[in-house]
Length: 156
Image 1: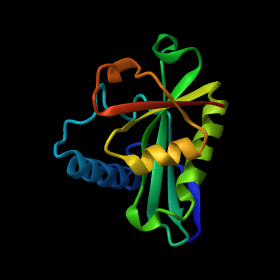
Image 2: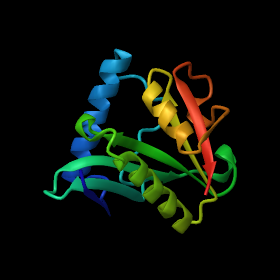
Image 3: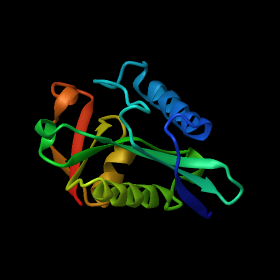
Image 4: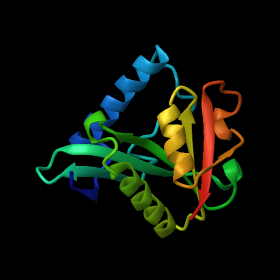
């Protein structure tokens, strides 16, 4: 499977369809739609959103970056938001490609650190981030006290 990754507005229909698919998968996994602490990401606070598309133009993966206030986890940090790969594209390498593109975009924004949160019921995501060089860190910001959250970080 081959793909291209491009910057896409957060509220573009392709981005929206992937984010809705992610939410449906997480709602089913956690048994509710109340599994993300904090303010949901939006076009107003996610300046970078990437979508991977097949050669035919079908959206298959996405991820965004939300800059964080220096006091949240340290200076010059961005948070990965809405990282998702549709089930049929998993194992193809597109997740790694999107993550690396997000890291490059984070550096372009002046970030020195990429942080993220994933859920305790997402062992596949946990393994992926650890394999890609992310280390578990204490819960930060709105995730503090969440029994369903794990946070990770990587210097960029």
